[in-house]
Amino acid sequence: MSRLVSYLVITYNRHDDVRECISTILDQDYPHKEIIVEDNGSDPPIEPFLHETLGRLAVVKVLRSEINLGVSGGRNLGLDHTTGDIIITIDDDALIKDPQLTTKVIKKFDAEPEIGVLAFRITTFQTGEIEAASFPSKNKRRSPDEEFETTWFIGCGHAARRDVYEKAGNYLDYSPYGHEDIDLSLKVINAGYKIVYFPDAEVFHKKSPTSRILNPTKFFANQLANRVKVAIRNLPWRYVITTGIIRSGQALIRSRFNLIAITWAYFRILYGLPQSLRERQLISKDAVSKIVKLKGPALY
Image (cartoon, rainbow, N blue to C red; front, side, top):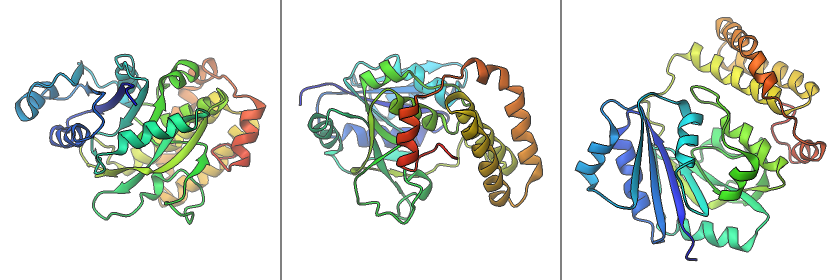
């Protein structure tokens, strides 16, 4: 129980949110921890604000990028500076209420060495209800109190062993954000690890509107384009086709038939196709079979 745990938080222009987030991490009863904060080009910079409000704490290390690297770039920069055996990543607008969360995570990893990633329970801060979009099961009627093996995790709250990143790799770019965690989840399973939904570890997500894509057209275009890119980079072509068809249909319905969003998404897909093909590394047949069996993000 004496292993070092690294907390990784990336932030962009959410000064008060990240301060609250860090405060709840500091309240963890597990003493052997470090907190890596990646400031993704905030204006003004985050570090002076944290020094003013929290003091200069040796356990907190702030990294600064002068430009916004996006979620993937920000996390990769932060990961490069972590030193813990276990890396816990949470969003800057998420809070931890259980002071024993870190201890529970370590005990779970120690008890089941085949687990590579623990997907946390993501609860909406304002309502106390499970955040459906972040629940890692396509069956949204499944009990959020039940632990189960899954095929993906959400960046808002999860824990991973260091060797997961060493074997599966870091995040590929899905600027500005969206589905980078699905991409990495596929690679984690391909590397032979299990992903387990672990409701005993819970974070409360405020979903701060600051620094999000608020324009609906941009949002739906970004989500659709990135999801198809995940398929191109990782899956056999038959699953790329089914992903494109099903996800396009979902995007049409959810966007209330915003054809501009769908057109813009496919423009982005085609524009980035040469790079996606260069980065295309198919996961194994065994990994695909496991994902299909567990009803994960393969068919769509």
